[in-house]
Length: 91
Image (cartoon, rainbow, N blue to C red; front, side, top):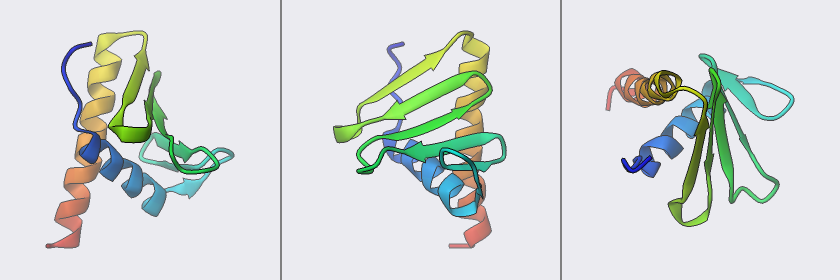
């Protein structure tokens, strides 16, 4: 996959899930997206609908999925989480 993802937006989506989500065994779940982090916070993970996203140090990322349409809908969902939160905050 050569198209670059906006890691700032991905991290913003992670923050939304961590802020608004319900506790799970690994992290928090919000609107079908689960967010978690490793013990030192250098690696964050977002997953849902058959897609796993790992964001590491220096904004590196690894996106794992079986089907392109699942990846696309997952990324759209993350984008919507960020967009809707900005609208909710009325800034």
